[in-house]
Length: 476
Ligand SMILES: NC(=O)c1ccc[n+]([C@@H]2O[C@H](COP(=O)([O-])OP(=O)(O)OC[C@H]3O[C@@H](n4cnc5c(N)ncnc54)[C@H](O)[C@@H]3O)[C@@H](O)[C@H]2O)c1
Ligand SMILES: CC(=O)N[C@@H]1[C@@H](OP(=O)(O)OP(=O)(O)OC[C@H]2O[C@@H](n3ccc(=O)[nH]c3=O)[C@H](O)[C@@H]2O)O[C@H](CO)[C@@H](O)[C@@H]1O
Image (cartoon, rainbow, N blue to C red; front, top):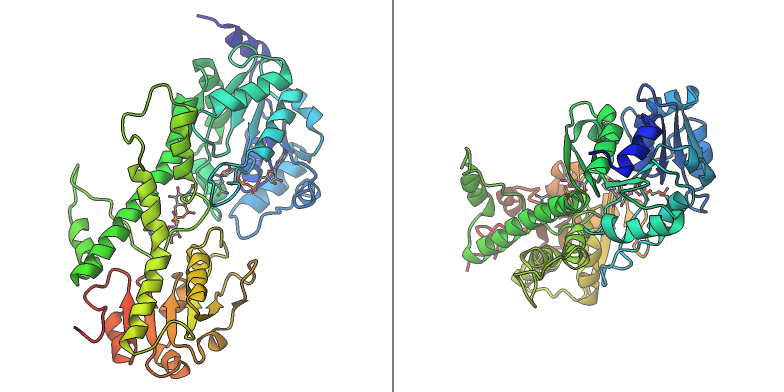
């Protein structure tokens, strides 16, 4: 049956002009790919002229990519769509009036690590700009990672208030979360399956019309807007849970004097339908801006989108939040291994020099957002240790002194701690490292980088996450 919205969309006709609000890691490749779709006459990149990001407007209109790091395919794509006159970046939001579809890819950080409440200030500004110039028959899609219930609730209200139009009658509204990884933005947008969730069926259909032409290998997975919000936050919550399960098992293995990696090999040998276990890897902590926050988006969603009372848990923490606590404990556990190793050689933490290798939260990147090393260093310093940090990728970080030269970091150190699995740490000459350190050196492996037997033979006291078979030297 025709609805008022379907009539408005039919009257608007096929999508020919698209706007993307937020020229960041998500918005830039997204806008460039929309602009490359045959039949798209204009793709606007709407970017506020802020002190920190306003520079992108000029760069983008010159066909240059303002993003850090290598993004295969993006430079050429941007140059092409600018040269063809299809893509145009602007801080003039009145052009939204021309758009058949507007997507919003604005950052949604937490206000602070403590309160875990999303800071929606920027997103609200973007929604109000979209609402102010919204016209009948337009599709609005939120791509930002948001708490379940936001699209159908708060975002809908802001758009309706600002536009005087009604979602589901005058304009279509959907959520299509981003699943891109920096370094593979174009490929991920084209090849990942795309979750598309409208507030109603007409909105879902219109959003599919927008995204289908961009996909190469990826398939559209349609659902409701709230289900799409739950999918995005839950897929990262589940990954965090899997990591927490590996971390908890590693702590068990240490306590039982067992090698976690033997156990992992055993568990992972279960292959086949319905019996394979997705066991991940333990480590010195979980960082980044996805897994450290999306669990709390999901948890909040139970309140924001809640229709009926949650049956379990009531009044205590969920499995998912407990998983967050396990992962957040791992930097402290790594410190406990430092203290344990030092006690084996009659040294105290206080006054010891600790050489820390790795600051970024992922190997071989300069991304240090929510890095576990930050917490680890703070714990060491609270206990009176002197810390030196090496990272070949991260050169500066507020409040921390980082060195890209490993020699001054390891020189005269009592303990060496491997916090990030950067490629170069696998090839280090640990005999040389030992000679640089003080007598009776301790090595703590937070990422299963070294062979414990090689390290013990080199004269180190070895401690490693999950290595209950090799820790507690000498054997008690
Ligand atoms: N970066 C990723 O790999 C990634 C992956 C998945 C999901 N996401 C999600 O996508 C969203 C965007 O992330 P990002 O990494 O692209 O953020 P980003 O900070 O790189 O980009 C956001 C851009 O929006 C601009 N902006 C902010 N307010 C604006 C406004 N009112 N009008 C116009 N422009 C405005 C900022 O200046 C910035 O250029 C977030 O919700 C994030 O969680 C990001
Ligand atoms: C679009 C989006 O949201 N993408 C997410 C993004 O997540 P991300 O950028 O945060 O990277 P992660 O790989 O999840 O690592 C996070 C931290 O967890 C530690 N870790 C990891 C695995 C393990 O077995 N044991 C660990 O301890 C690791 O050291 C690091 O500190 O990319 C993932 C694909 O890489 C995606 O799946 C995931 O949806």
